[in-house]
Amino acid sequence: MLKPKLQPVVAGSDGSLGPSLGDRHEAAAGRRSRLLRQWASVALLGVLWAGYNSLSAWQDSHAFMVNASESLPNWAFFVTDNKAPAKGQYVFFAPPQGEIVERHFGPDQGPFGKQVIGMPGSVVEHRGEWVYVDGVRTAHMKPRTRFGEELHPGPTGVVPDNCYYVGTPHPDGFDSRYAEIGFACRKAILGTGTPIL
Image (cartoon, rainbow, N blue to C red; front, side, top):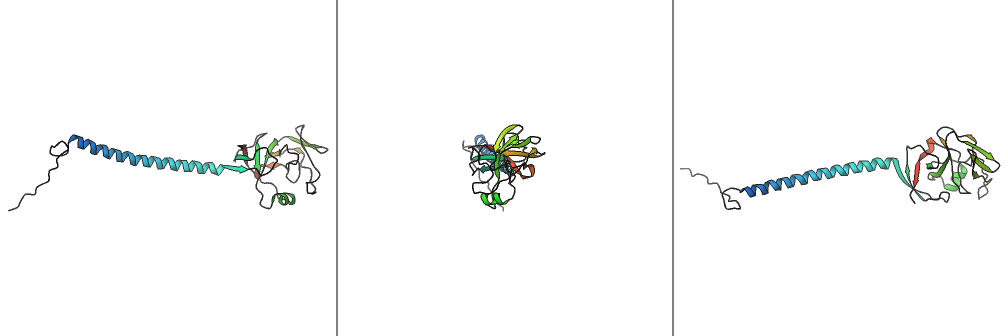
C-alpha cells in the first residue's frame, strides 16, 4: 500500500495556513525593490556612457593651453577648434618653420597664441617702423632680435581670405609684424582661445 506524500504546511506570519496577505505584499515589495535597483543601475550606466561620450566629443574639439611667453596678458586658455576667429579674439596656430622660430622656440615648439587684429579684407601697411591695420597704428617693428638676428617686415596689403593679421601689444612680440610669422591662415589655425587665468 502506498503512503500518501505529505506536503509541509507553511504557516503565515499571522498563524494561518499559507502565506498571509502581508507576506505576499512584502515579497512583492522585495521584487519591486530589486527590479528598481536593477533599472537604476542600467540608468546610471546609461548616464555614465552618455557623459563619457559627451566628454570625449568635447575633448576632440577643445583643449587647455598654457601660455609660456610674456606676449599675452593671460597664461591659461580654453581653446575651441572649428570656430572662425573674430577680431579681438585669441587665436592659436602652428607657426611657420624657420631658423629664428626654431632657434628661439625649439624644433618641437608648441602653438603660438596671438590676438586677431586684422580680419580678411583688412589693409596692412608699414609707415617706417610702424605697422598700421585699417589705418590704426598696431605694432612697432624692430630690425633685429635681442640676439642680433635680422628680422624682416611682415606682409602688407589686403589680408587674404581665411587669413588673419595676429599680434600682441607687447613691444617684443613675434607676430604678423614680421615676415618670419606672417599672416595666420586657416590651415595653420588650431582654434580660438578664451582666457581663463
